[in-house]
Image (cartoon, rainbow, N blue to C red; front, side, top):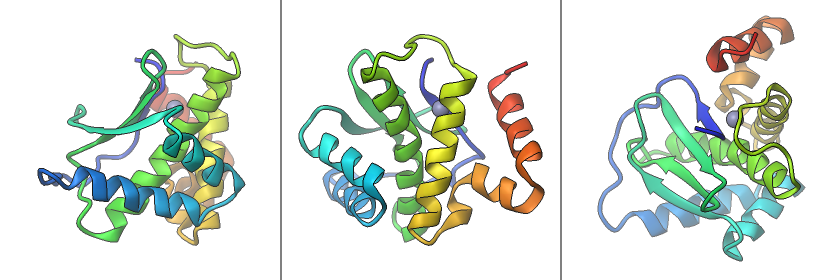
Length: 162
Ligand SMILES: [Zn+2]
């Protein structure tokens, strides 16, 4: 599916019934603390241009963006009870938010495009740095530890890019 964001396995938990709204507000508050991009995305979510929903996603997915209904789905099986899960979710929302902004700007919609993925990974890494949690972007963590070439090779393998 277009716009999906597969990362290392999220820690499995369960969003309690009735917890979705509060969790969404917590994620929005983290976006508010970030940078101009994350604040702009938070505004688009609050205005309903793009929506944030929780859904049980396949194992290994933290979030995905569906351009048909303009919804960013966050995996409801992530552990949100601790702040780490919230910040990880926020970083994934930033990645999908880049896909959303590219899509509304008229970029390719239905195929995974290496250039668009590169933009999304750079965006999430920048956001993670800006909120003082650089390691919460898996891409950013690999790049910091092993360098850009290794990080981009990780993306290529993950997405099956040549
Ligand atoms: Zn992506």
